[in-house]
Image 1 (cartoon, one colour):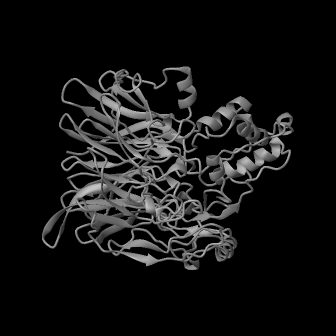
Image 2 (cartoon, helix red, strand yellow; image 1 turned 90 degrees about the vertical axis):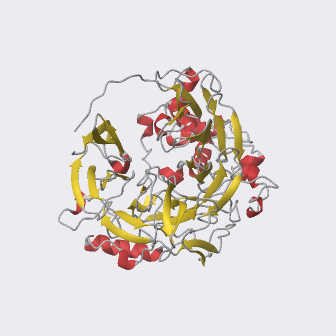
Image 3 (cartoon, helix red, strand yellow; image 1 turned 45 degrees about the horizontal axis):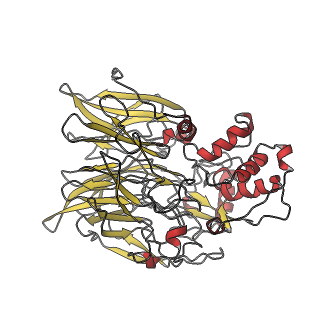
Length: 622
């Protein structure tokens, strides 16, 4: 059933020409808003557009001028470093606690990253009330986990891009943190790198550290937590324990006592392979592995895991390629030959997050099972004598852009080709695009005008500019940002025709009893039309589940664009319908006029699917 409601108000966050240039490419990266009221007529919505945290009246959509600077706060300010030319925004909604707004950020994942410090702002004035340094300063706990003692000044990342949650009764904020920059080469951030890849528990009132747990030491796989944690109460040995659970890209579930961070199932430090052919890299020798629950996805890729539905020719080709890659177990170091990252960059669990049943402590998590190839490439950072814009542009492209768009500019399985970008953008538009970013692309505003012009001359093939002479003088921070390696791209392990090298299922849905750590049921989620007539394959999926007290689990998320309802107790599929575009989002369940509804945003766009802008709402039977 589709419900149509009248629009009450609309607000577009552009109030100046400079805002328009800054925002127009980045507006659609936001995944939610925060709501605050003190019980009076003062009701506020907070969200981020571009680099600005904004406050508007929830009833009227009007700017609240008393918040920050005429209704907005620049997230680049107050970080303790000069971040005016760095990419700082927020993809997830802030979290309200009393009269505070706790804010995480999205930053670049390259060497130009701003630090991901956690901050709290006054909801009425926009004043920054406290800050927690996720890359510790000298004298702060965790500083000793960085071999480079200037890491606090030079290194970025360790940010909360995936959202956080506050226990409103105890005032403890539970904050998952991402990896330190850059994601894949750690030669300039030796050490275990606290508080990157951590669950961080802070006093929401003051920002003071309570406890932390690090999921990955010295992350070189981009295996940071992918969603906000969930709060629940579990029963162990007859005792009720207030717990917090975190699902991960690696397929592990970590369960902690909220008060002190004690793992509620044993976690052991396991030795891992530390051999790497990358100069300067220093792999951490152990990684934490929970003994329960069992991983909810596969974690290794060997010859027996090759897709059996491939043609004989493609099967043989994948087998040959696999033999040349580093694979066979988790935590394989990065390499020039290529390392299979499995679970991949996009799961196990992804940013939709899990659902949890408060009645019986069952956690429901949907997951991706797709292998990716991490291949490291030597980078020539040194300018040549009398270097032209053409050679400088090619070099700067490899340093800054090729990890997403590929050495050949043809993109990959996640990022688009820019071979013909000149047909869409002229020189000025292209240079502006570099400085503002768009969707998953961060703003490269730190690049100097000559850098951007050189890149433009190379990409757009501007003959006149290519002959210009390029001069470069690096500051200390710019010298630090020069690294000897980059990845060849974000590439899934696929056949030449685009089929997964890995055997299905490629998408799953699992129910786990967190009282005892046992899996209650597991089912395949989604179906790939390329394998019609085969057993259900599952598909990659983005967006989480939602459950009802009456026993239903609703989930869209899948590439095949369907919306499904399962029996939450057994995993049996009860209902499905085709959406106008895939619902890469988490459903919302609500009641109105005595009826219960479930609504899903049908945005599509990911996984090469069609984009849309519709919401579909369905009525549940009485």
